[in-house]
Image (tube, rainbow, N blue to C red):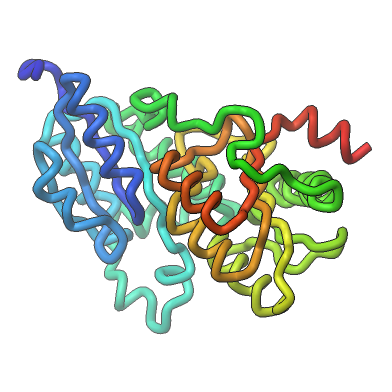
Amino acid sequence: MHINKPPLGLLAGWGRFPLVVTERAQSMGTRVFCVGIKHEADPNLATLADGFAWSGVAKLGRMIRLFKQAGCQKIVMCGKIHKHRFLYAPWRFLSLIPDARCVRFWYQRTIVDRKDDTLLLAMIDEYKKDNLDFGSALDFYPDLLAPEGVLTRRQPTPSEQADIAFGWELAKEMGKMDIGQSVCVKEKSVLAVEAIEGTDAAIKRAGDLCPSGGFTVVKVAKPQQDMRFDVPTIGLFTIDNVIQAGATTLAIEAGKTIILDREAVIEMADRYGVSIVAWREARALRLAG
């Protein structure tokens, strides 16, 4: 390892992605100092990373201080934050106990709404005040992005392709408004759209509403997607939810969607006859037109 090189700062939420990024960065000779969000980050990061500390999600001042003390100059964030657990919990102020910097941040006039992009871009600006710059975790793992094509043995049927094209346009419009990135469709009828609850909950809701199954899940990047955060991600947990809900097709955006454990994901999809399709937007719009 390059001991004199500043460590990479990793702000970690839920899921496997922070573990994968930590391992890849270390394999490239970069030390990793991780701040794990309490109740979200995987505890295994504490032993995997070169340095580790826990922080509450509302401890903005503490996070910045920890990264600076560790000598970090560049930060990446990865892993999901289940926003609804924190924003709308009963007595949220008392349960979160935000520090002074977080309170000032939360009530600044430049935050005009609570959309993901608004909050995350404002947070990045807050870090910049302390000379901490955010980069993309994909700088360490560009091969995680989905290649174009049908990734599984089963090709989507003509009706499923029509549902992909139909759902694609809707998902892009939702993304443009920063509502969500996923939509569930059957026979060009919308079963569920993703909002604050996340993709997995939206898929489950679609399954509850469509007990006959056979529907399509479309998950795309926002038109204004910032690859430093909130990049669409699928993994074994996603495919398991697709299977349990009764969906038969998962469509994602090639080059803009992360696939964790790709070989295992495709093997599981093949085992249950699920088709995984990675399209470029141009193809989706051509078929939709």
